[in-house]
Image (tube, rainbow, N blue to C red; front, side, top):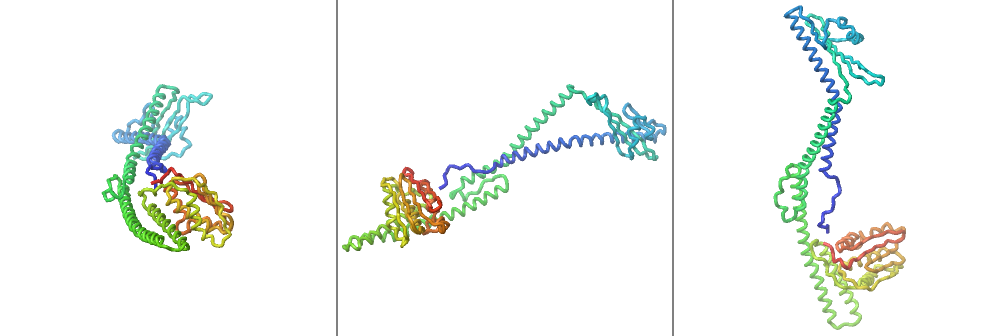
Length: 440
């Protein structure tokens, strides 16, 4: 039976995956934003300059309508003319080689005050915008701008500090937001997990709680339906076991009563041996039936533990199953300890009988080594190269018990059962623990 202690389930945590995905998504968004920010900044600056110079052109055009002698737009940083050649020579020289079109912004830059190492004090920018007037002329408007480089200035330090603070606050806000979002998504899943663990045959008919999300509520309904079907199946199986327990015990009891009646009657010595064999077979049948019924009841008490000599049970199984050898050249090599132990007799009879039966049935020739020492039962079954592949599956096909039954009984009792394949033999080993009276 599965231990009640919850084993650590392997797999990734949804909480962690969502947190990492959200955090990485924000970091990626910040990187993309940082990459695109200069591009949009430059584009925004160009649009601002175009808007400024175009507004100057429109203002001049309105002024000309009111006063044909209105002066051209001109300030400390702005110059204008009706042709490129009419601009100052230094300005016209910079755009002389370019094909100029109306409603387009052109610019030229130049580093100034550079030393021998290439460090410059400032960058000079010159913008040119051509505004078409309604009378067919073009108004050439220029804008000058200078960007100075002040190394180590307090302004730079303040800007860097501000960027650092904003970055740290942004990361903290991202981390907190990721945790809050993940918890809001994970808490209903954890509630569903806790509810599913508490679901049993008694409360399966109750309405599932609300887990906030429609998908989780649908899953809860399906879990309820599944557990309900399993509970009905288990109830049918338990009912069958109760009926089987009664129906199987009745003929066994009848056989036992008739055996006792036969033994009470006077008969010759030649009748004693068959009657005793029938009596032993009937007793073993009763023990096996009780053990199989016990395996079918997960919550039932373990078989009764008694003081016995395992070697005697092994010898009894060998005698009862020796007919399986037939005329095959097989011999048993026994190494059995006569030590007593407190063990449940019923599971031992099934395991000993099943393993010895398999050895006698599937071995073709040679020595079958059977040993029991210090609580370890071992059978070395010789196999030939041609039959080894078949021999490895003997426990799956033999008399309906099979390897699964041996493993289940051993696991239920807390014993170790192993199957080892060698070049010319198959070794089955059962390690008994007298102190362990069975696991639930």
